[in-house]
Length: 148
Image (cartoon, rainbow, N blue to C red):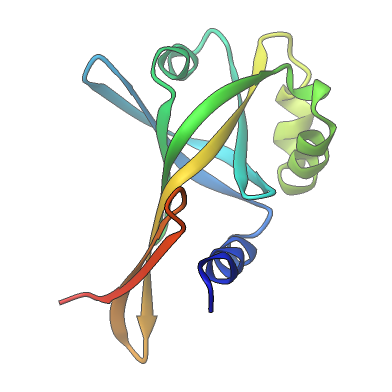
């Protein structure tokens, strides 16, 4: 399988959306919180209030990480504006997180962020043996290594 096929398989297995931990940092202070994340076309999206700490951290340092279960995703974020202005995001977010969509998406301070992944690592088990899968997106590199 090629890198593209392996990464497409990973994204398919990831699904449309998950509640994940988002970690951000600024001036050597790292913070983490649970977020509702949707996946659209190999990028990850979330919304937040522009008065929150994570918003200012992302504006000043766009590097961020997502984590859930056996998956970590590292990349760079950019603000896309007011969530209702992005139809694809709204459709996906409403489908995956209907109560959060209803409560927060149209609030005036909400802003949409897109995380473009650079690095993905996932722990998997093959016949009971632990392995790590590493996708380096920019280099189109894939490694599967047995954990020893």
